[in-house]
Length: 289
Image 1: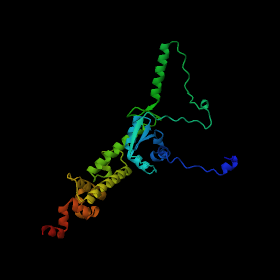
Image 2: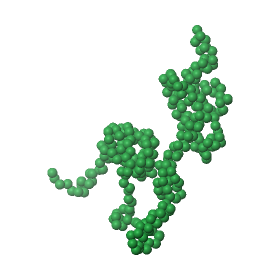
Image 3: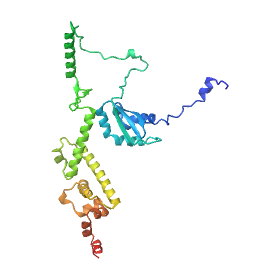
Image 4: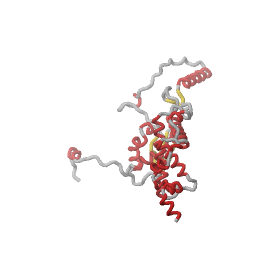
């Protein structure tokens, strides 16, 4: 094979395609965009086992938090062109290495070090005194650092009260409690809801309201397609909550016309056939004949 000058070889060279055959590589590239940079700093894709993606996390608290985010992560993974789609996630805590940062090109010996402003302790005369100095040092560090008020994990700033996993869990619990109250009493206004959920904002309430309306309508649409409701009558409770939450009216102000306008005549007839027959005398006469 004849030799080719380097200049000529480089002139005809173009970058090759990315490693599309390696699904883990493709997931790793898209990972920060799927979970966000904050979560990506504490969790990373580790391996693929059949249709399961194993995710390494820094702690069990992060694994628990990502369990709640699994549907969102799976939707993001579905957008990646993989030969075999990822169907499940598995989390393995304690296997993620903390990345160390230093200026590009600087050797490890030149890494910037944190300088302590505290004076160096006096040399101990014996082992007992050295142990006492160590205990006092550890006690002062505990007092100086901030810890999560829920799990006791150390925080990076004293201005924080809870760590990220606990903060996310508290937000989810608050959102679930709000949605439960709104479902049971959809006629309550913002001032009345604040008596049960302190410092409730209008945006927070509107977010819960929209989530419930979307969820309830999916249940009602499923019942309409199947042309039947469950034996427990869940769809009737959902429809009542939907009408009250959508109209923002008190229960005594809801009329059959409002129900029919919000649900449609087909759903009304499916959920409350007797009321629909009364509203439509022609249907009642046909049923009687």
